[in-house]
Length: 216
Image (cartoon, rainbow, N blue to C red):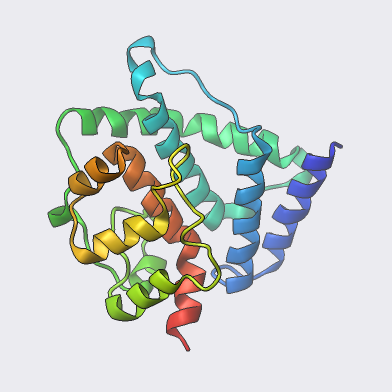
């Protein structure tokens, strides 16, 4: 077993030790996701030639669905059946057809807009397994202050790939201020599907921190 396989297996098994929905479990899965990202060993499934120009958006959406699945279903990993990377890449390939469909629908005019973004409480986020588009939870004043201060430097370091200015901190604050997705997209130079996927994925990632802060 390689060093990276050993590390990923330990992280997956550590996450499985904690109860579903617990802060410890979410933190363990978050460490696993960051290790998967940093491994640079996630596969890149092929797409039809006419969709090559949309590959980054397709990949971002597929990876978002994959990471959401891992948050909910890490218990389905069985170490006796193979290594984590093998399992994760299998799951990633299976999510490409759905991601292609989503990007294709967006390309036909189904654009995201602020009017279609549903405000949700933290409880709603926990109860909603589909992770549809949503804004920062409703305790806006407290969360704005928390995101601006960023005491752990987590919101300002999470950014869209190859665009260090498109941070979660920046995007979250703009959504709170009422910017539309189109306005944010134009300002940061990031396509709307990529922007939305990044934002949703990191809202999921940071939910434990929001919970901990708002429960004080």
